[in-house]
Length: 453
Length: 181
Image 1 (cartoon, one colour):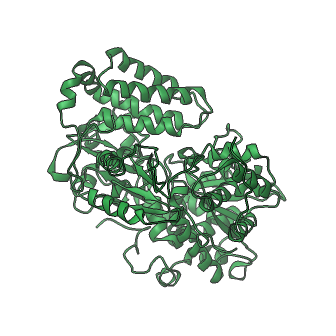
Image 2: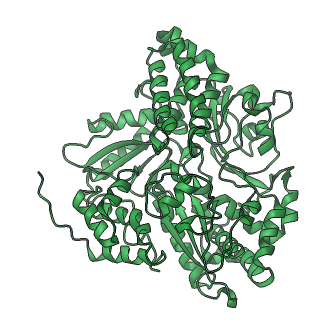
């Protein structure tokens, strides 16, 4: 069995309640940090652990924390990014639903490290049922003296609040999230200044993903040096992977970084293989934004080495033959999947979610969706495929925030690795319509492949 | 021109909003705008009319345009009336891979309406939405705060039958969602 750290007690009945969570050693990291460590020492432990941001970017958390400005008389804030909305990603939801106290504990320990006396959990509006769960956990933490004034009799005080969004993927971008938290449209800010200097209400702010905050708990409990031994190289620790698509066992899996992709897809401990024992066609390994890879390249690198579930191995080969770990949203597609149709769902998504601030993204995402739709409808030309390529190149790197890149990469990689499928749609659309490019899962056994086209 | 009706929030909604205002630093009450719009939408049958938004502006002491621009940005806010039961069906990649198009087609057929439309009796609205974070339990749909996952067409039928008899708007939140500070 793989090593479980965050999900160690996930199967304990009632672990979502304070009593059970506490009986399993919950809130020990708060005791250890507040009673025996200075805030700077907590930051140092996180630095030593090698923990990298689990939201997608993979930036070293300890370093991000050390950038936080500490001007006199100005409050600083810790904001938890629970706006999980990268297609294919549902790990934060799983964690908050089953282990709400792990997030609350992580928020207290992390807030202490950063000297924040007010912290917020910004959660996507669609997860309102989780607001209820988190509010209950926070109320329990207050009732038991883990939140509020003079926690554990120390001088440290903290208030923790949940703040719902209202449906906007862009609010997962940290500066858009802060705008939203201030009651505005989720338009990303121009950086610099970075939130560590001027974030929420213009004050120094750290924004961290749910899983990142949760990982601080075991790091403080076991020490940063011990945590750094888990995993492989610069991919320290464990990672929650959201596995979905055509696999036998979709779900959230905690993996020690460094296991092979092949093992993750085929072993019974994880995905359990491809549904109905079909052949693997392609994988989107880290959420919709990262490049899609065909079966051969996701299982082995271009050099013929087995590809591993780690930041470095998944990125091996750059975008020519590699991809990214991203948020860990692992979408598996079997041999019957139409890459062009799947891409259409991504293109529509990014068009819908573009905030509209930067022209390349606002206009480009719309054009990409339209052109892919045109190709699917059988009206495409070969020039359209080149035009798609051209548009994505003109979006990438030309926008304030990474949504532009995120919209461009799936299009680029689909053309790079599956250009033939686009050409098939162009050259012989009627034949494409006859191909049963569609998957019927065990649940659904009726209706037509092209119902929404 | 439609007649402007007077907006009076219930004491419960007003208390909820005032409770939330205390969570943010003094003078930063605008932060409550999004939660307040959710509360208003829940009380006013699932959509935000101009008078409702104006009232929120008044409560938070901000300009009406600051409310409109936010309400029109976020996809969970409805600026037109919706049915008592708003069915939101996810159709992004993982859900599409596992049959979301069939779910949408089935609901459209059952209700006799298309995506974005409301049944003439005002009971149902169907809306296709982007990824709701339920990829491992696809296909799925959301009604109010509830997720319905691993859908089959039979399950969809059961849901439609169940919500047919609901007279109250299925909202994302109620008076018990947030704790009292």
